[in-house]
Amino acid sequence: MNEPVQDMPLHTDEDVVRLRKLARDMLVRLGFSLVEQTKMVTAASELARNTLRYGGGGQAHLRELSEGTRRGIELVFADEGPGIADIGLALTDGYTSGGGLGLGLSGAKRLSDEFEIRTAPGEGTEVTIRKWKMF
Image (cartoon, one colour):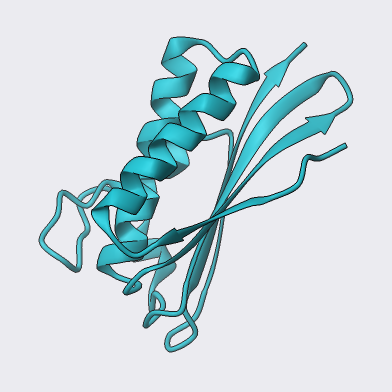
């Protein structure tokens, strides 16, 4: 059984701060360790900043998940920006199209349990990450 989705706009740095707090609160409520919380909040922050920087802003959707003996959190970041022409290249550590460290997408992938990306040039980008905990 999955909880309702909580939607958040991502248009300013303050929105990123609010997203980080909401994600951390959900992770605490679900009983994730401090290390797990830090990993997921870091991934969420990177993806939210990418949504702002490269997608021109967008939306984040957060929800708690429950599947058998595990519970988790799902975060979806969606924008209507220019999209990503080469996903493989974009997921390469050190690659950046905007002067950053080039660890946003690849780092978020490593920090989460599940990572999905849907994008096409001119059609925006949607990135989904999930973190699970066994109970």
